[in-house]
Image 1 (cartoon, rainbow, N blue to C red):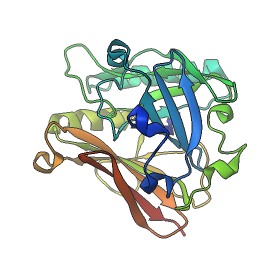
Image 2: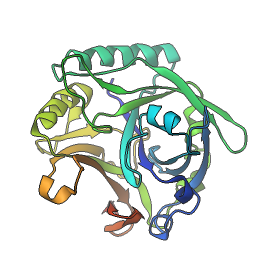
Image 3: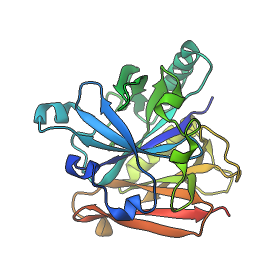
Image 4: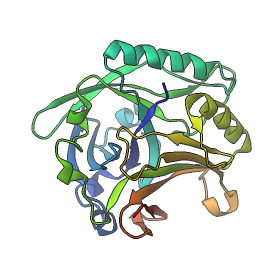
Length: 284
């Protein structure tokens, strides 16, 4: 069973979390999330009708040790830093068994990449609802170099009902956006290192299904809900030009959305020095 796209992570400074820029809030409806177990991070959400969401997350407080221990602790704020996939089999055991099988296949693919075992996590919503899930992060296998965060997705598998964590179906008004965005069209990984690109190709050929549009480095990734427009999101890899990427930037993640409105680009800055552009692709 192929994984489904779960969410994309946008890391922001904590001071920005409650005062997001108007270029973002004028295009997308942002709803309260909550603080994660342990109190290290808290978030807000952008929900879509296809069941995928953007998690806008920030670190709470100034505990440097707790931040450094977190998987995104050293990632740059103001960037899309990661993305997650999931499974939606009927029972926890079936999900865990399916993940274990995929974990073995990725490790055996020859890319030098694998996944840690699942670790339980959760958060409490502002109205007191306890959410539980299990996550697993990618890892470089012994003898192989590490890859940057976000180049291989992490896993987020629900232990409680997913509709509690992502209430796009129970509260459909939360997934209505000024830009008329209805879902995720694509996640593009811009990668500078050709050797890393080769390893990622090998891993994604095991994890996902090659896109039917003939693109060399593109894979289909289904959403939790089948969209009415009938189009499937795509995971793509693009070679990053080091001369234009900026100092210290070896990879970055780009997001595209489907919209029933006009095609356009929504973008701006969250932190100085890095611009985010979200491409809206019309399915009208």
